[in-house]
Length: 384
Ligand SMILES: [Mg+2]
Image (spheres, rainbow, N blue to C red):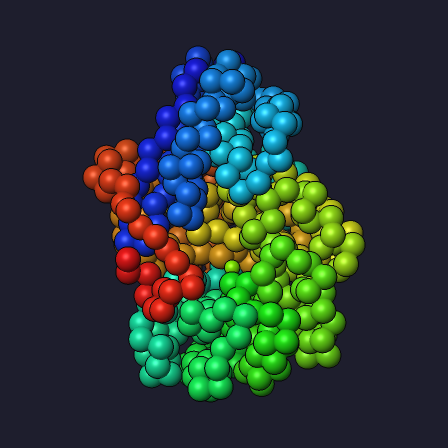
């Protein structure tokens, strides 16, 4: 079997463009993938237009390792966010094709199921004013939908530091959310790499009384020794550190593992060269007793890819999911993805990833000129 055509299609939404890729073969099988390439939609599509004729067209979709190896190595320049995103789109679509060719769901080609359902946490639910009342009401709506875990970034546009008044506001928001969701719901605190170590440590201590279940990206992603400093300082709190959505190759994870600077890795399959790279990374993390909770802010296909990985990975923790709090057409862009019920996805059904694109829906919502800036005031409202 040979790949004959690669077609990107971008769908616009209020705060993100989701790029779908369709990979066609000479045997009529078609694989799909999608990604939210944050503020770099055209860049990723441009990478694919240059690399697909060079590496992808004519390749055997079963030879996933060979394809990823060639795309990672043979351009010589180091592969980062953009390249590992483009590779992932092709790689995920290849798994879809392989699964269809064999009549099996992808997770059964990755070792088979190790669990019967996949726990999810909600994100993107707090597009409201930054007041305790509005956060309380929004968090209540999340648990009413059955979620048992939710994530949010209460820190506004903070960068390195926030002032004393803002710190009190942050504390009031987290207090309101804990009050809304009760003692048994997991609250995950997102810091988006905002802080210098001193502020990260201070805020971790201030928020500890509300029993968060992790602190995410307390410091920016480039300096893992700084993260280790935070990890050591807050270890007595017993609250784990999660990070990794902005690490794009196994080589970038080496130092994180050696330092043991985190407890949970948040690899984004769509920014990490795809399913197999992430599967191998999860095994490496397991040797450090680290869990994996893949970052996922894409459409239905990237969510499906994450579910197939989760189904087959022993040290999987929980799956991020935005689309219950997004425009309804995001879910309608493909059929076949399980819904979150009582806080869990069912195992995805194949063959392949198990989804079918609705190209009419995608075409009806053209790409938008959105700049999602996490360091702007009111970014969390996600209305550009
Ligand atoms: Mg994050």
